[in-house]
Image 1 (cartoon, rainbow, N blue to C red):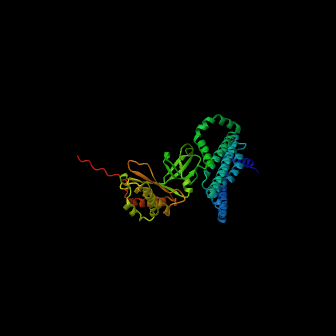
Image 2 (image 1 turned 30 degrees about the vertical axis):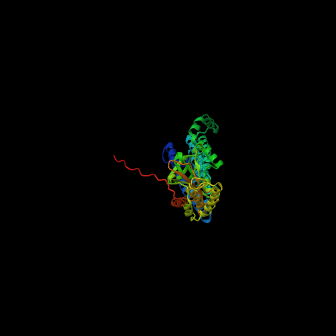
Image 3 (image 1 turned 135 degrees about the vertical axis):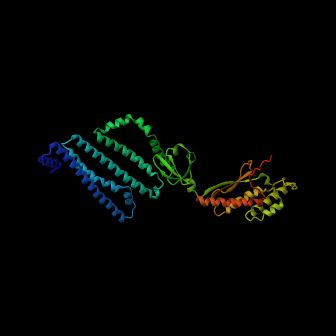
Length: 417
């Protein structure tokens, strides 16, 4: 006995008790509808308990995290809607069959649309699970997987939306595609940022411009920190003050930025700082000065060699050394430069396989800059700052042995009227 016969049988029994037929028919329709909803609710509760319990038992027996992610992304919960939809699709439309054709078609179309939504939800949850799982794999950890998922979901929801409209209106899919073609200009304007983000995501991935975990600096957006997320529309950067800056993805293509990945993957981190030496403290060295500096152990070999070369040259040209300016001479700033380079090459935290030098820059109104250009072996930020500070602490303290002075801005004295 099908549902149509059950409905007719109940209506006959009610009308036999003196209830008008039209009222009895309405009461039976409402009653059957409520019974279907009640049975569907029970079925949903039971199916959810069974399906979720089944998945949880599997997670306890396996060591893989994939099944845990399935539960986290609610795949079992969404699957538990399917039995209810099958029940409703087989019962609710038939309740209105022969009673109201409009309600019959409407209920059938709505349930078919719900089927499409649930299937899209299942596909999305499974893809999200797969994305989360791939993020735990080292080779995929720094890839913008969320962007790929969002691109796929845009196309899936686009197709699903057309199918839903086609089901609800009863019109052919080609009709909606034709309408969308006529509205293409409007759609391009509305989804401009999404399209730009899609193109930018593809270029970032193909060119390997930015990865999750990279340290990037974008001065125009006040972003300076690690990339924590790359999606279709935004790139999130966690700054070093723990704030998060969201940047449109296409800005990584249209604007300039600095990616510090090369430094992170290299063998050292660059130290590039200068000491400002007062010009008035720079002078030639006499024999007493050279004798005093000869006691500096790491400078002694170079000093002895250079002193012999200079003395031989001055004797050869028979220069008058009653004035130090005549002939070749050693200067305190020149020896300090050589001392700095010798010190850097012997420093245990300096990578001597990379550039290590002390160079003199153009004089300024604040003195002559002596720039240290070297790479620390430790790239960790905290350790890097300690190494840099230790090097310059030593160099600043060493200047007095060469009778050099560092530039300091003198405090401005008050004007006495």
